[in-house]
Image 1: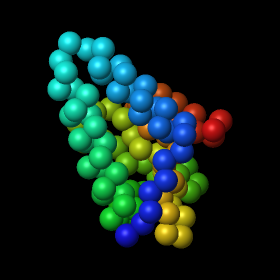
Image 2: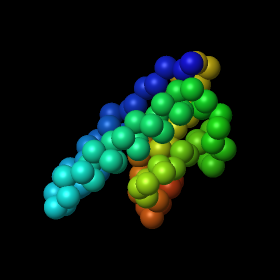
Image 3: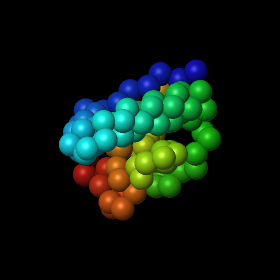
Amino acid sequence: MYDLYIRGLAKADIQQIVDYYDELTNPHITDNFLKDLYANLDTLINNPFLFQKKYKAIRICYLNSFPFGIHYIVHEKNIEVIAVLHNSRNPEIWRKR
């Protein structure tokens, strides 16, 4: 099992998504997003090599029910989440971080 570290900017990405969904009329959307996110983070912790490398060492795990990807790097026994981005955004935005 790997340790999970979420960078501050990735936490800000998640908060921004939550804030957006909180503004929508259906209160269950935020809960469903977080369940999907946490389920995928659990998958990463248990099997971080399940998803292929997209950009050098960066791997992307796409959420099942929402149009977002978790961008992460696998270190020796750690997983570092560097961004959670909408699939329509430029995926190389993490380079500026």
